[in-house]
Picture (cartoon, rainbow, N blue to C red):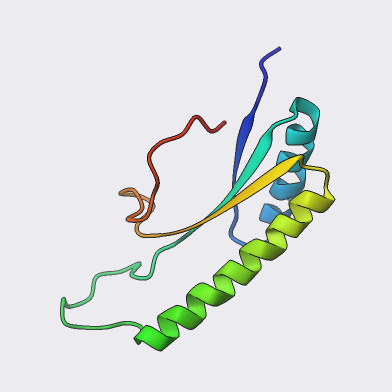
Length: 109
């Protein structure tokens, strides 16, 4: 049977992603692995003029802070569900093209 040491769980803070966090945590517990919770925020899901700013700097900071808090809550859920180790990643960018803050590829399963 394969051993899953790194389990990637994308989260969008919905009820279904909460269930995915529990399942990923259960797998991590069984295989003594790490859960990596990832949320990708795409600030521009549609085309805008180059000189148009969708969010002010303060709004962007506040939104990022709220997303980080939600990701921290998901981490607590994973810890509570028994995951031996939990990492979180809050990324920004277009997930279809690769996030602008995406780290180098890692062996996540």
